Image 1 (cartoon, helix red, strand yellow):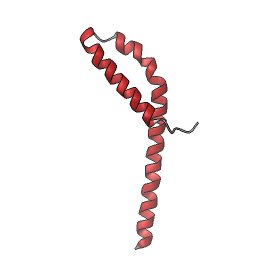
Image 2 (cartoon, rainbow, N blue to C red; image 1 turned 180 degrees about the vertical axis):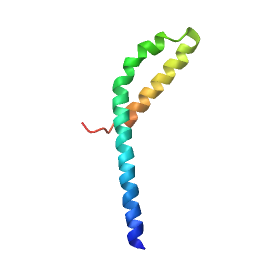
Image 3 (cartoon, rainbow, N blue to C red; image 1 turned 60 degrees about the vertical axis):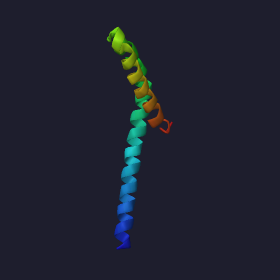
Length: 73
C-alpha cells in the first residue's frame, strides 16, 4: 500500500515540475515578446478604452515576468 502512495506522489511531483517548467517558459518568452505588441494594441484603441487596455497589457506583462522569473538561463 505504501508503495502505491509513494508512486502516486512521485508521479504528481513530476507532473507538477513539468507544468511549472512550461509556465516558466511561457512567462519568460511572453515577457520578452509582449512589449512588441504594445504599440499596435495601444494604437488600435480609442481614447476611453486606451487606459483599460494599457492596464490589462501591463498586468499581463507583470504576470509573465513573475512566471518566467525562474526560467533557466
